[in-house]
Length: 400
Image 1 (tube, one colour):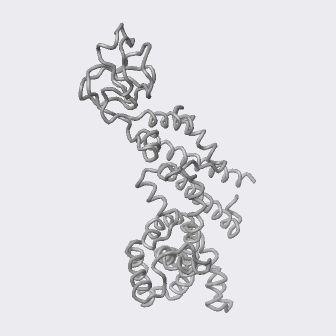
Image 2 (image 1 turned 90 degrees about the vertical axis):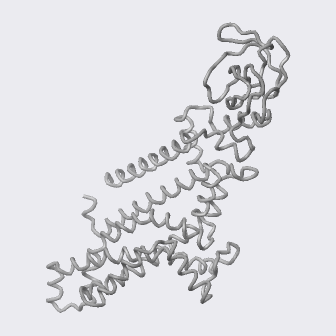
Image 3 (image 1 turned 90 degrees about the horizontal axis):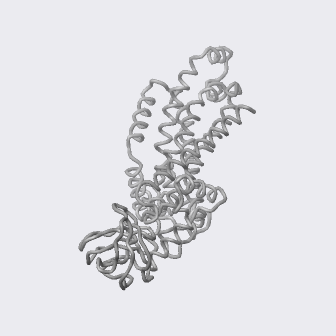
């Protein structure tokens, strides 16, 4: 029990670390408010240019009155603040009005409006009052007026409850959850199919190569694995698509989400094979090496001395104790395969999480990026927990 509690605790801590790092990066690299709201409202950086000497104010369409505190060097102007500017200056964000020097009375660190100031005057290309209203609403809705730790806790609380936020790059801000529900099953099917194909290819290949160790056929096998491993995913995908989809016509060139289930699985076979072949080559090399080492063990020599057939020696005696490295790399390689799927999905036009994260990065749709990163991290952790379970089935001494 203690072993599994430790593993579960490590998994939770790892997921928290990934979420903190990703969320922090998304919020520290640039202003998260404008990164979020810009694609929706067209607000961009909400900065204008001064067309007169005076004090920049934030009025949001209201006639300014009362006193303002003079500040200097601020990036974003807050309510009740004023910044001294001259003609041609780039205003702080959210400054939408210039109060001329003859319209204010300066006393120490404050100014008081004494003359008529028209909202929006003397500002070129400045923000509209409706845009600023959208900004303030977004601040409250997405906790952007709170410190970063508070924002993180609020976001994480919503996330674990299934609220991944809206897609800011889409009209109407549809939920990210809708996108995930649509794209995740395709990527999951692609990765599962790829790993199954890689395993089906790798294990018999490794057994055959180990049985023929250091013979000409084994040397040819070694050269083949190195060639496959050296070939990038995108190059292999283009070759397979050109040969089997374009030239021979055995497979469709694109994925059609509206087709029946069995047709969609058939459409995924070629992209899955593109991911599976390099993985199978890696698995084969590791398993072959471990099998050759295991075949030198005393219990294998004893089995041979008793007259056990070579096939039974390989399958029943040597394979199981040789699987540890294979299983370890199988789990670790899951993360790499997810990265490979990103490229392969775009080559074969499969609308999965890989293509979704590319689209989100291009338009700076950070809630989508955050959601996909967390899903990938969760999948990676769960796969490695499953690997731990398999370890204990192969050798219960792992838990001690």
